Image (spheres, rainbow, N blue to C red):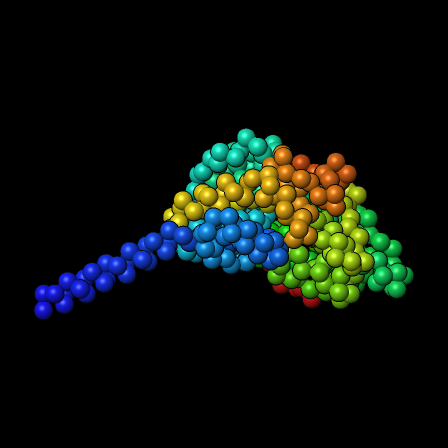
Length: 341
């Protein structure tokens, strides 16, 4: 009887040891970039480290909601990519972990500033300006002028021809909302959005979906980050990207380690690895044309350059603040979302 108990105990111990050994080689990742880039990053990291990555692709707003809901029992180790505002909000609420990567010295100033302003609870991994992409063939067919400015999107001829994402789920759309508030002032921005709503055919869940739809000819214009429009052009679609004449905001795609991460050391390995120049230089292989945060990374020739775009001094701290974010999203729900087409 005693030997049976001993064998069972040893077997249980061996099983627990095997599980913990296996767990040391795991990483639970949420990726908020385009799925093609997410898969590429996952596969590269697994090949280089032999760490198994359990990846879920979610938009920035969805990820923030998930991380917040699971705060007492985190199921995610690291959150890579997606707009910086929800990363900043998670940082301000103590949902992410302070970490100063040894790679910080290699990063552009805007990426380091993102880290500093969050108390090193997030860091910039890429950047990209907001704008839109339009389908040249559709506009020509409908005899419509290509829109160069935010004001042009209110043209009655564009009724049903524009898509943008829902700012509750999409970091891209939240950046658009915050950008318009900063350019016009809040009340005038919401007056503009009500008029724009008449031309919106759909508020999508994903930030890049509107320009993919335009590429397929389902609508003429998608309000997106310009690099998402450029990626459609690179795939051979008749899409032209635009930086609005009045000025526009931009994103700092960010990365955060989740507080309470079960695989913390592997999360730090991903964090440092994802900031390396050679890793960021491969993003173009997935037709992702953001500006990399590492100063030594190759900037794709297709990438929209900040110096060619009229950028506003986007206030990441204010619009990443939980109260401000909640306030303007609730107003969008009341005044725009409730009457959306």
